[in-house]
Image 1 (cartoon, rainbow, N blue to C red):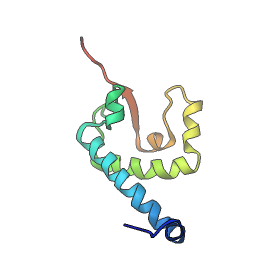
Image 2 (cartoon, rainbow, N blue to C red):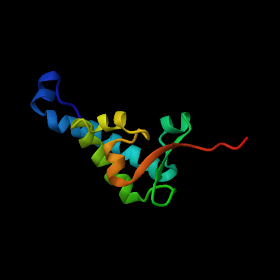
Image 3 (cartoon, rainbow, N blue to C red):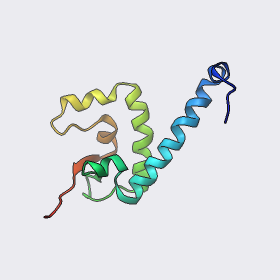
Image 4 (spheres, helix red, strand yellow):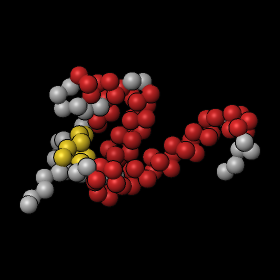
Length: 106
């Protein structure tokens, strides 16, 4: 997609952001569904778990988490993590997920 420069992008800002954020969300959802980790999370030994089961979250929970993460981030929902010992974001609290360190057996 080409917006014909800065003026074209400015005229279609919302569409431009959708074209940027939608593919990102889809890729993140696919990584989280496959292994409960994005490449960055894997590099740091972190994975996403569904707290009621302690396992990988269901697909619908991952999708809802991704949607909520975009909105709660814009609405300063990320500030919640600074006031919680477990450092969970608002979207994680809503859908019942948490980021945890993987147990690596030596």
